[in-house]
Length: 104
Image (cartoon, rainbow, N blue to C red; front, top):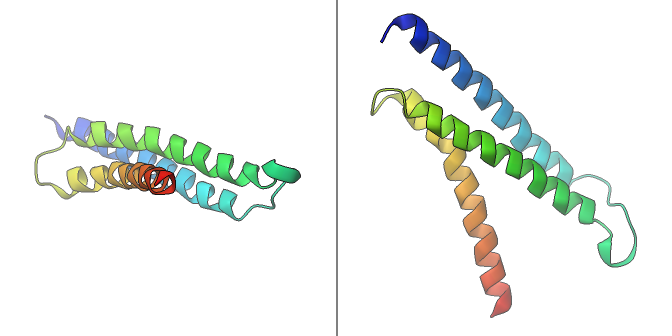
């Protein structure tokens, strides 16, 4: 593999990592947004905003993981590309755990 294609992959990986970080941070901004609506649905905009942006971050994390698999095994780039997917899976497991706990 030539160095030019490896540099291009690294650049795309860094861009995707920046997009993932922006989506992840913006999901946290949504949690602290002003609640809208009234009655039962008051504040639902915060929940849907958080989950929506986490969904975007999860899709980008899946792309990051796929792109990172093209790097040599054991390299730091390959390991760091799996971190966003691990965080997305941890969020899914936490949500599933909360639903199971609430049903008991």
